[in-house]
Length: 335
Image (tube, rainbow, N blue to C red):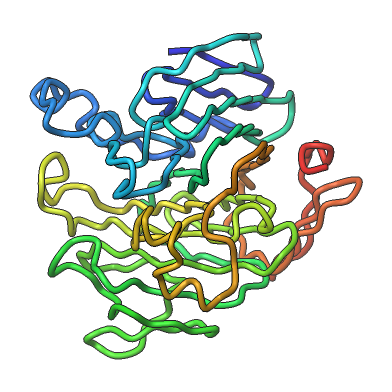
């Protein structure tokens, strides 16, 4: 484990799988870590992919989800293989990894007084590939998602866990509700019943954001990306619905907010071929060959707020229904 720290923030990086299982901002653990990371029986079971055995915090995926093209592990080499750490300082690190379709360099940084995890990933690809960030957040008492301008929200044909999907498959909406067996339900509200669900938000071009108001924790988490690079934000709602090992029905109150370029639950082959309903939204589904420099940020505001707009110029300004906030942020991260 490699520890990074700056005033008000610290992070832990695990080179085995490139996970950041720990992110503490102003004394609050921001990210979720699976409870079985400390269970010897699970850790020694090589039939379980490494990414699932060590599930924790945030990591990157290339490709995202099912690899039905190169037949690698779920979420690809970045989430399952050991990264080579090439440089470290008290507040930053650089790590690299060769992947079947090229290479990836990760730059992870903290800044004193900034409640922000800064990440930049540089991909040099010889072949097209999907890519995603995979941060997971714990919700002690539910929460609510708000987003920047979006084209639509979609569900997928195949459920994430058979028999435990809340939302009907194959839906698309530009509104705030999706159909369930009990009728329409706001997709922005974290479910209060057992479920395993997966939705995709399709963002409009520009600096895109997703905010999570956590009721029990009394704070707001904000994720920033460039939607020209990562047009989707996939919401993974894991609330006790997955029964196979190591989940065993005990993985609940977890929301993944996964900024991505991919075909969501339809898989890697669908992203490359366009055989997915997401093709109707006219967004890229995979990174083409070449170099891609992808910035991303996760930050925390220590109040439970409903975010309505985010702008970044000389400062990061967050508009909420409770009033405006200015957050310490390095604007050059997205320039």
